[in-house]
Image 1 (tube, rainbow, N blue to C red):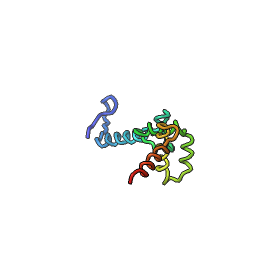
Image 2 (tube, rainbow, N blue to C red):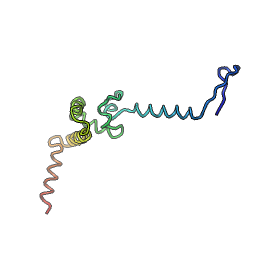
Image 3 (cartoon, one colour):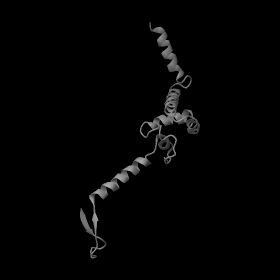
Image 4 (spheres, rainbow, N blue to C red):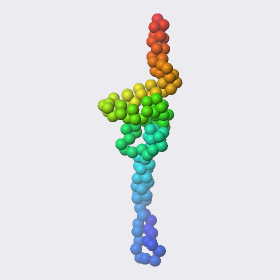
Length: 129
């Protein structure tokens, strides 16, 4: 525990500064930083991420930006948010994974998208004995 004089040092009042208080203050700062880190959607669109952001659960900060960029380019953020709001919460993760995969394959193959991957798989299955 450290004692310090308040004000200019001439008053007789003393306050005590506890080391635990500093640790608590650091914990609050750490928690605030974790809350204000934007999701991939908000980082890509350069906006402030709120707690009501529908994409925060599905597009993380690291890999979510690239994934959301593909989704936004192919489908648009508005359409995907409407789609996710109409799907039950237990199916949303699968829907986001499917939408992300379709968007990324659509960017690499604009004509067939993920259908080309399925066709390649089916052809390889037919050729194997």
